[in-house]
Image (cartoon, rainbow, N blue to C red):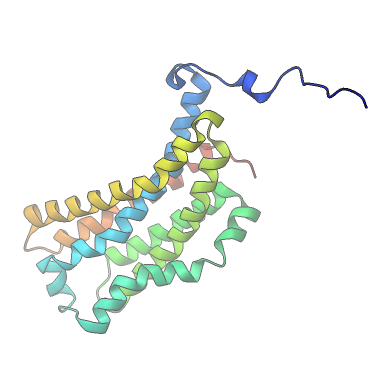
Length: 217
């Protein structure tokens, strides 16, 4: 039996071992990965915002103080939309590509935010929440894949762990936005419309910049 041959080099020999911010390529890569990482932040904002809106008197007055089943479906509408989108998101990520799926989800979310911002009735508000959840499912499916596939090998574990942790940043941000709008805009419908409009920030950023992120598919 021939002796086992040892390869002259392995992938370890090519790994950069210095500070990542001193390597131009890794620095640009990590800046690009910040974009899909923001998906977890907007997930935290979208999931937690409705809790803050419910304590705003102007939101309560505008929608007629919803209670019971109506209040329950307002809270669950986003999850219902996400459940509806679940069968489609894996195929979108595989056949359209990660960036295209993230772009599509962000466009749908922007449409939902616009509808929610201008909603004159509870029914339209609920429909808008469902649309946001539908689009968010596309983003939350594609974003982790981009992070795992594109992150530098020595940083893959750290960057991946940041994804779910970033949800809490979005959740806290939503709470403070609702608090600030209540403090400074109490007595007007802007006290609940402004927090709603903030939901459009990350999707708009992703729509404009996602094509600058590398794609494997």
